[in-house]
Amino acid sequence: MNIRLVLHFCFLLFFICFLLFFESCELLSEDNSDSKDEPINENSTFESAEFVVDLVTQSGVFINGGSKFYKFSFSTTCLIRIDVVDAAVEYRIAVYENDNSSSLVKRSSYIDTGENAQIFVGPLAPGNHYIELDPRNREEVSAEFNFKLVFDCSDTDELNNTFNTATEILSDGTPYSARILASNDGSSNYEDYDMIKFTNDKYGIAKIRFRAPEEIQPISESIEVTIFNDANDETELENFYVDRGETGEVILGPLAPGEHYIGINYKGECSCQSEQPYEISIEIDEQDIYEPNDSPSSAFEIQLETQYEGMLAYPNRLGVKDSDWFKFIPKVSGTYKALLIGTPRYPFSNRTGIPYTYLYFYDTPGGTYKKNVYIQGESSVEMSNLELEANHEYYFLINHYYNSSESDKPYKLQLLSQ
Image 1 (tube, helix red, strand yellow):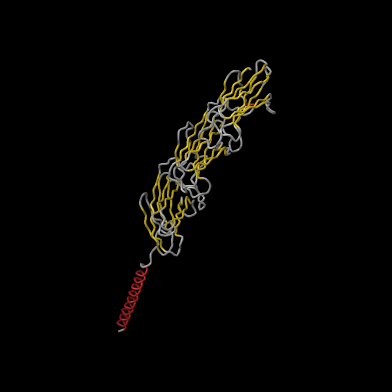
Image 2 (cartoon, one colour):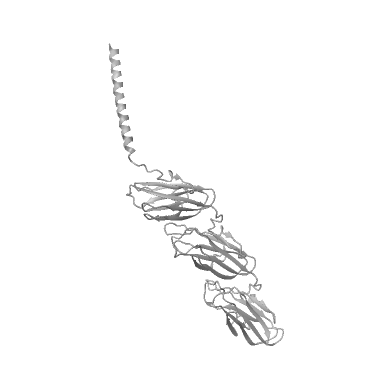
């Protein structure tokens, strides 16, 4: 009798537990069905980023104003273009070099509602990189977006933004082309910067020609070109600006034998970008065999009735003029004259005017000059009635007036008996 009561009690207890379990499952099912009505914000972190590939349009929806993350990678240095199509809301696109938000922001740009835009980013090193799409309006429940990535891994000289990683190019006038994609727009600490290296074996005058891309956004901006002495002495010898589609040139020197550097970037802090290449060429004229002769102590000794040709560079931004010194020691006392033929204006010069070439005469290595003459352009002028004593050292100095234009043609100097 007692055993039967125990069995009935156990059965009743089991039946009650079963009912409770069934009820809890039903409630859980209802909760799950309700949760399906709430949109889930997928790929909302770096860890959950959706992988994207080249040339495939990505479509998505912002959920409750939350960000969207996408991941891409390549095995070599590449540049990328992000094509944005018909933005439904305002949002920010940020490109990160590594796996988290503490890494370097390579580019950050804002997209306006209804905008179609192209954003250029690079160079990016081999590895994983991330894109964050961040809507400005956090209260936006849902809004569609579309974008496409375009990879360009053809510029093998990228990551040349320091003296140590500079791209070496020829100095024989051969053109070199590359691209400056994006500048610092104030929202990141990154800008694409190209460092170029060239070498000369002897003293020479450098003719540097730079052609800017045909298209730069915004159209009012320009590219800055800066010439450095060398990697150890980062003194800026010269810099100039070139507007889009234009060509700028400078004649610099004389440059001592060795390595020299040119930095190329967008002017100032602007949200500038272009996918078109610039072109630069460097030509070293090493035919001025009298260099270095920029002081009386290094003056080149000249002979009577011999014509000498030399090159003069425009004064650099430090105000240092290219000065050529010559020394003459007469074998006999008498009256002499110096004939100077000047230089024409360099046709591609950024500076106006025609060069003034000056000739100064000294009877000692230092002190004040005794006579001087000058000529504009490639005309000739004489310095006459020079009474010189035998076996005495006399000096002649030739340079350009500071504000005159430069020239890529040589001057000519000749001493004659009068």
